[in-house]
Image (cartoon, rainbow, N blue to C red; front, top):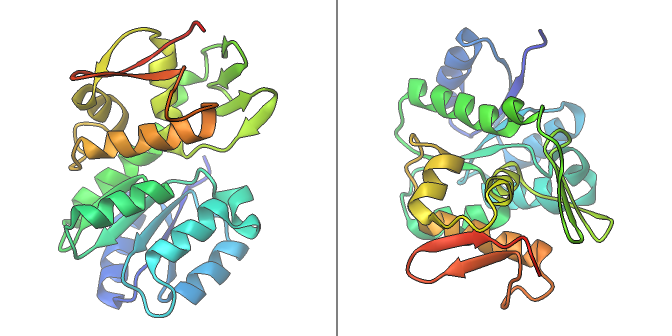
Length: 237
């Protein structure tokens, strides 16, 4: 079985060495970069299955790198849905929400336990892989098609790029049409019980999904808000 490659981008050599050691002990191949410029060059040359990305980097910061991976043509073909875990010394909610708007999958606040970080890596990769979904058939609702095997979403015949977490969220909702999920339920089922974010994380991802699949995101037809409770997927027009 081919080892998965984790790319660590952090300007603190001690953090890189410790994280590398723990990841390699857990069976991963590890690549490293110290600056934003080094990271972008490395990621063009070497495919990563997951990126661990520090926010505060010399030159190009972590947010700018995440944006390039998700949206820049030279990267998005490979990294549009590659899981990204942000490392930050700031526990500010604004940072977390900014990252989730870009498409970051998880946050770990410094100082952190290396064992916890490896557990987060495993959990995020497990969700991104979604092996249990491979046997399920595509779901088609009107002009929307969701394929769990390819982890793809087609809207009016056009492919829509989703992050791993966005796909997990729409897949959960679409598999249970008209079932109302609270934000807490979505957080637990999509992000997992080990995730330390808050319910605003769900709100951000719902907004991003609506912007991608709804004709009028302000008046959604697919992902509807049930006021005071949460969200549901409406299968019928």
